[in-house]
Length: 250
View 1: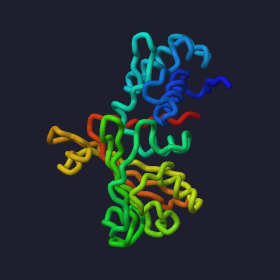
View 2 (view 1 turned 90 degrees about the vertical axis):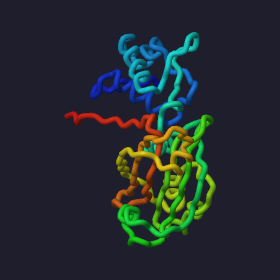
View 3 (view 1 turned 180 degrees about the vertical axis):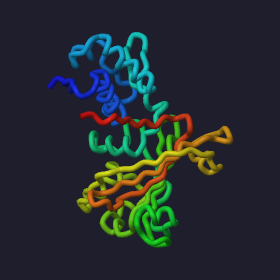
View 4 (view 1 turned 60 degrees about the horizontal axis):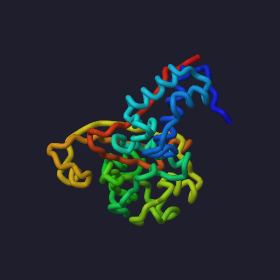
């Protein structure tokens, strides 16, 4: 079925959103060739000028680059930090929490006493037992990000894998949904920046000091507003994390 333009958004923006989603979800992997200007114009019934604008926007976002004799290819892995929202969309679209070429090493998993900020996020008493999973995400070039996730302790009874230092292929939200039926409906990310500690720099393979970090804090909640997962993630400051938004339209 051929894609169709919706008139509520500028045509070029709809095509960009579609291709970006395919790239960030892993449906289009690094090295894959994206449709040419001619093909985009035909598939989407848009002008060649609009198709050119689409590819230029993806280049500007460092998601693709032109290659002589090949076309425009996906190159997101070099520059992108896949945010939690990217990963959760990837799990929904492809069944994999990580895009092709990325994988996680679980550094630790177990029950710990909740620090104050984690207790506030999960809605438990400070010092209560909570599940803590820490991981480093890598690709063929090395570490991409370091992240830590916390869960209420009772989830470990339903999902024992949360306490194991093994990867969960469809991600922790998928494992929790499969075991308990609880699904996440809302996600909130807070972003900041700071200088890496020596341990963080070593985990991320950052040799120059001081090293800047992109720091994120994410919360997943179910339809009743109960927090399923609270997480923190670190990535080197030269990687990009992308969020899109639109002005409300009548």
